[in-house]
Image (cartoon, rainbow, N blue to C red; front, top):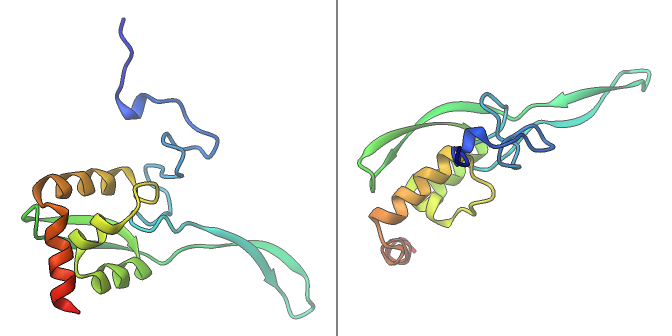
Length: 130
């Protein structure tokens, strides 16, 4: 039998994910900025500290990709929504984003956009906007 290269057949990493970046099937992690839960203390009036989790503010958002000509639904933080809007849309955000931060789905979108549109076009758009 041959080696199975399907990414879902890879062994689990230390963080429980298959790619080592912490992205699980239904994890509380932003697909664009990789913001995830943090741990801290809940402090009572008597200054007793108990552990608690700070969860990211995630929203299911439909973005429009001009390069792909379709709508893309992602689970992202509100901070990522602002960043996408600031950079000029989903396509420009994904072109600039580092691959190690993106979820597997967002990474597929980034590669598809890079195939459709050369990088020089985004540089021209950014120069015109300034």
